[in-house]
Length: 253
Image 1: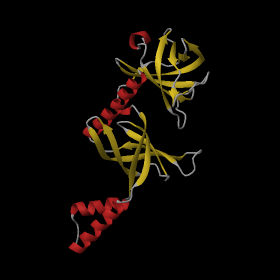
Image 2: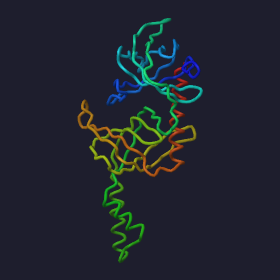
Image 3: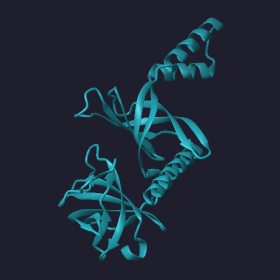
Image 4: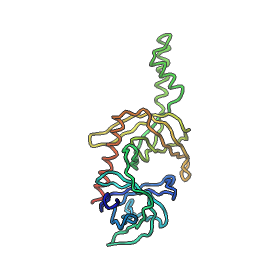
């Protein structure tokens, strides 16, 4: 199946994983290419390069490969057998240790990136005020104005953040605050696309929030979009694949 699906030069995203298949915490995604297919178990891939520096894969360690083929996205896990130089190119020889699986749902493919953003935590107080304002449930105009003033005050409280990866299903980002799983937030994104800059405000639910141990006062969060419209999801997926095309194009030069 490998030779039927994979072609030399196919772009590959590589992420460090445990033998069990679980991704290492804070694992980076590196970009590589398929150099050769030896058989259905062993392939040669180019050593990833970041900021002009080769990223040597650890022999005996496990990695997840996400491969961009003419037939779509595929993924599998591998273990590194050895690193060597061929035709003046650094390569890694890896053994495939899982089935080659097609990624069927595009919205769950994550793009590694650095995006400045901000977000707002939706509190119980805010939800109650919104419900009251929407229902126009006030005894007089003075009360109405007071509630609307408070709502504007709450809505002005946005926290700066940095998006580390994005998919049609959610985000991974960092900020200076620790949150609780289940917290409701609104995320404001600015996506630069060929059709112009898209500013999106999306609802999301906090899945995980953890301290980054080697960075004081920095916390990493994973969120899942909630009640996202089909149009907004498609816009995000479009953005992701535009960025991937740019990356693949830059690798050819």
